[in-house]
Image 1 (spheres, rainbow, N blue to C red):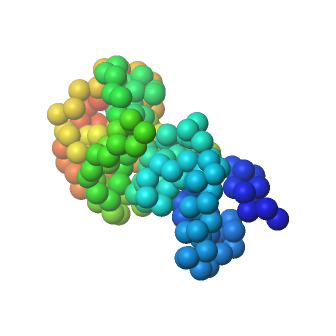
Image 2: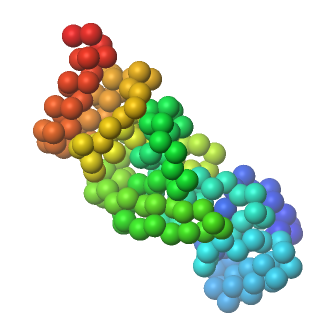
Length: 191
């Protein structure tokens, strides 16, 4: 089967060199490099970053955000803004990862914030969307609190506090977070 057809049939919009090798069932790195180079030269692949490609400029930026460094998932202000928990506009996309770094690709800034590895790989409160992982609003809220206990949230009315209480234990014995969650969950639940 035509190897370009394999790429098009894939449900992904972003491909790493490893993804292409799997699609092409190729193991020789020279073969993969040459074929990828030819596809980029002919315009069949759009280069994003070294070893990362898209079919064209209309790729899913969230998918790219979770593919640059892995493991990773969308979280923090990106998810909070989507769900109306914060009103501040941020042009960058915030991602939980194993390192802290801000990078630019195609005039989009991706800001990676480091979480402890055991938190990063814990899938509690993480959803799978298309080809990327994204925190639930409750997980994103806790991720933000984990890194910044003084954070101000504009609107907590859409937060499901039972989910927050279910996710909270993955952060360990964090008394500050527990106090904040207990205070705000009681206010919302009406205790």
